[in-house]
Image 1 (cartoon, rainbow, N blue to C red):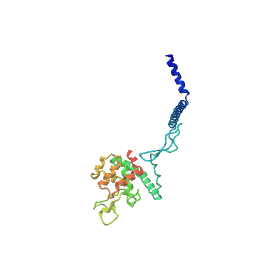
Image 2 (image 1 turned 90 degrees about the vertical axis):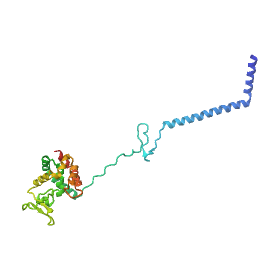
Image 3 (image 1 turned 180 degrees about the vertical axis):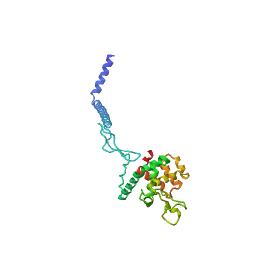
Image 4 (image 1 turned 45 degrees about the horizontal axis):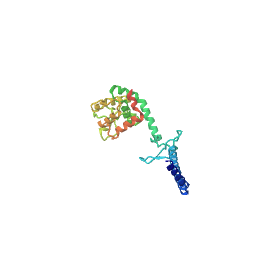
Length: 250
């Protein structure tokens, strides 16, 4: 047994003593070291890539627009601003001197007759906003000849052929339909308007809420109060521009 072991050791010493064997071991060792170095470099670079997030803008594939990059370490946001989500309101339109004069005239009309319109609303159930808007539209805010000379604020016509002298006046001789009622004061004109809208022709309007000025305006046009196709729109625009609807809550 010992003799076999000694023979094995002698063979090992023989191989180790050979030059070509030593060179083979060195090559093998070099190859192993080279592979470990490559693996080490690869892992190192991968870790660096994970540690440093990309700080460049990203593209939204749905819209094609640039969006902000992820926040940098420390809570600092990207230098790119976020995409706005709302459109800024346009600047207010400047009024011309004529428009300002008209607005001032309308406001004075409202100040003068608001209490009357509210009183008629409580008695007859007609929105004060509608009464005021009709007065403004029909008389150009009280500046028409019919209003200034005849106290007629709602274009009330006279269809009677046997009315007393001074009861009405005409603006044309072509037709008796051009005769308009003359009133002693503006108050009588407002009362005649309330009585007219309480009649059979306009009775369906009273089914609307007293605060539903839009339905009232459209109902007046549908019932034939005026021939102007944009009459309802004019009333609604006047009510909203002057905020006349606030008088319906009185």
